[in-house]
Image (cartoon, rainbow, N blue to C red):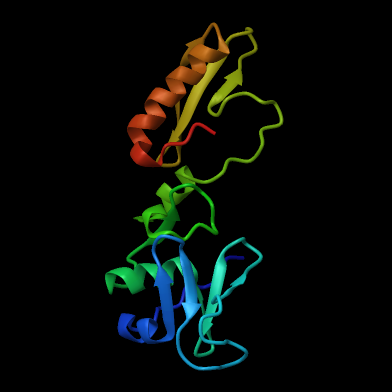
Length: 169
């Protein structure tokens, strides 16, 4: 079950509690010694999902969401996506707002057992079918003589649909 997302404290308050280095992506404690946090020590812990979480005033927040508000002064309106898919890379240049669907497009795909490219399946006739999901509807893109042709058909449509969020692997 995913963690609930709490509304963040005001940006000004976050800036009094934490320092952020946009080049390294690190958040460090800025004020006071509370619950074992020393000034200058790294803030947060690694959660079971592989994200850095930070406790502030008895609430847990995702570090990347804190960073978004710390940098922009605004509550994230949607998900914050790690462009390179590395959940620990909280450099400012690696973060962007994204819809839930866009973060799914950018996720690391599970290792495929059959090692076929994404969107490609065999047909009973020995050809290769290309399909893609669009708005929860599976769209048939055609059948092809080779895996490479079917994969190219899938990738062409996926690039148009997903734009900068498109990932081959």
